[in-house]
Image (cartoon, rainbow, N blue to C red; front, side):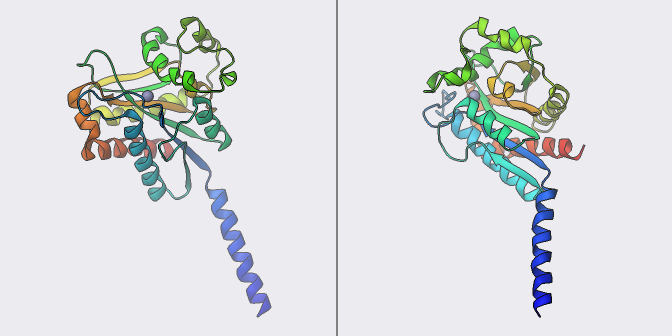
Length: 251
Ligand SMILES: [Zn+2]
């Protein structure tokens, strides 16, 4: 009797340990902005970027967890809270992330601007994408503790020299995943293709793993705002990034 009990206990311990071993892949999903940091705001419907990002991030996390219980899925935030940029990267690093996906929504003064673009960390044509990098990095100015940024000023072009000096050992895998994501936006979702681009995002620089920043569409474009706010738009995006994840994970 006692032996049988011991055997059962041992079996459940072994099973628990094994399932932990099998959780060998960790994906960190980062909903950009939050709390007092609204991100971009839609001009027609007044949709806030922080809310869109969170909705998509949560649905994506749920879908990956459901289909791949062996994958550890971590959300940097799952509520409407302010989260410092560095903290987002810290979460990825603390969890030993294998992939970091930062979800954002674009905006531009030109209301006709539209389409999806997927960014990886890099300096190729960095100047062309400086405006979007500056906008997404500027959130660090809202943070109380600036010391973690070691004098980096998101609004000063000179500060961006640190990106020129970096070594990006995750470039190939970041590019691979970014292309899979962008293919979904363009092929499956039929969005205007702004391409896979390189830019100087702090959150990507500090995440020690393959990482991308997805700009799902332009909230400043009335038509695209409506699509982004719709259930079908959102589930399309979730399915698209999920399919990209699936392809990347199986490789
Ligand atoms: Zn953003």
